[in-house]
Amino acid sequence: MLPCLDGRNPTEEVRMSPTRIIPQPTEQRIAGSAAPFTLIVSSRILATDAAASVAGYLAGILRPSTGYPLPIVSPVDGDVAGPADIALHLDLADSSSLGAEGYTLATSEAGASITAATPAGLFYGVQSFRQLLPPEVEKHSVQSVAWQATSATLTDRPRFAWRGAMLDVARHFFSVPAVKRYIDEIVLFKINTLHLHLTDDQGWRISIPGRQELTGIGASTAVGGGSGGFYTEEDFASIVRYAADRFVTIVPEIDVPGHTQAAIAAYPEIGLPGSSTAVYTGMEVGFSSLDVHADATWQFLDDVFRSVASQTPGPYLHIGGDESHTTPPEEFPEFIARATALVAAHGKIPIAWHEAGRSEGLAPGTIGQYWDYATPERNGAELAASFIEQGGSIIFSPADVSYLDITYDESTPIGQAWAGGPTTVQSAYEWEPTDVLLGVPEDRMLGVEAPLWTETVVTSADIDYLAFPRLAAVAEIGWSNKDNRTWADFSARLALWDPRFTALGIAAHRDDPTAGL
Ligand code: TNX
Image 1 (cartoon, rainbow, N blue to C red):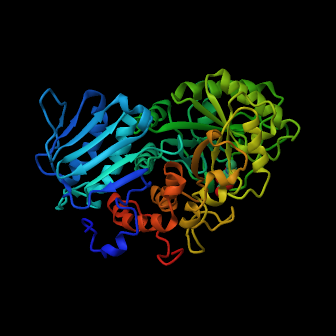
Image 2: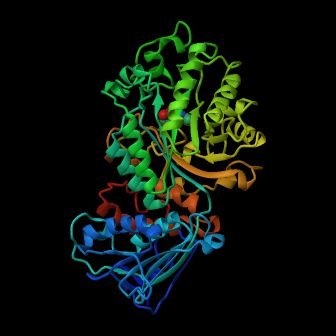
Image 3: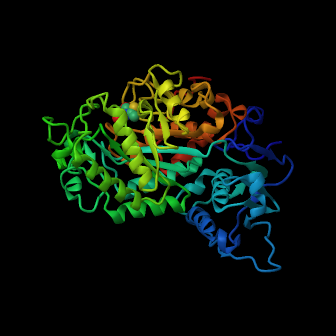
């Protein structure tokens, strides 16, 4: 008999992954006869100093809903974990088998333990552990529930190093708490990178010392004419810290040479001669461009890249490069070569959308972000290949399956309908990076990223609705082995996630339950 099935018919249940965890773990065993782990009022979290911050994060999840004190105890000699305790073990010797982000998790009547070679691995073990507990654990007030976790043993590590989400804070601005909320949500699915699209035609959202007009004028509006907003240096630092505490790397994007109307409104001398210098609040793309030849442009980019590099501890700086339709085509490759070199000179690894592959002078190691479709329809495949030929690697964001702003179906009240849409949860799940670009070695595929463009997205509720559950689908593609995942199994696990989304306060989209089954 399988344990605790929420009243579902057990014969139905055995067809799906035993632990129901998303993303699907590498190996999982349910000890059929063993009794579950039970959290009780006297439970403790055992963790050495190096694991204390992850232990604090775990306690932060468990204490509000259980009401238990759950002290974090540093084990001293002879202090053995009891059957109601959760023990976090950091064991560097495990790095060869578990890698930098893997973990093992064991739960049973004998106790709960998570072992990893790194704090990041422990953190992912915690994300799996919380999913073994009843969904009410996600609530913020004390719940009266038996806090049992299925008896299970997991050994788990990610397939790809890059498991990303992108949030466009330029079309609409999202406050620091809204960004932190999204970080808390994406880590549920073991996402480790948050790409912030910080600048676009409709707004410039990061403070650059010495370039006051960027935020004075450039940040003053948004799509539809709202009041915009921007992150001060302290704001941005607090996002970066909050992300780092959750093992998320922030990747800042300064989109150039197109998508630059907000910057041009602030500093007209960097725009194409004769072009508009007004702020822009519409939804068109591809009409603005920096003046590639102007010294003012390069002085501007030097100021901006220097500041953004210094505000960002992570190794990457994204320069956009997409949809630069009014940049003279013969000047675009040279611009990209110079811009990627400038990023490298400021100590960061450049990333650019796949159009930048038109340049044969990419700075060494420049990463391409592919957004053509899962079956290429434009020239994305050849442009992505150019990054590989020049020694770089690829992040996969096929627009028709991973763009979270595309509508789910005809009735989706927000979002956009291009990119082969609508994009169902099933289509967000049923694609495979190694099938997109043939001939790219797997070790040059960094991973996957799901972008959320925000022309039509205004609130955190809007973010939640478009991102979930499709981000969970893309996260599983990034984490789980390809031969270890199927839509039928994923959709069954997703259905069981439903009460957890509710408990978390995430009003996720629900597909027609009969669709795709
Ligand atoms: C395409 S494809 C964009 C964005 C838009 C988005 C809307 C690419 C790199 N850029 O500028 O916001 O479509 O879905």
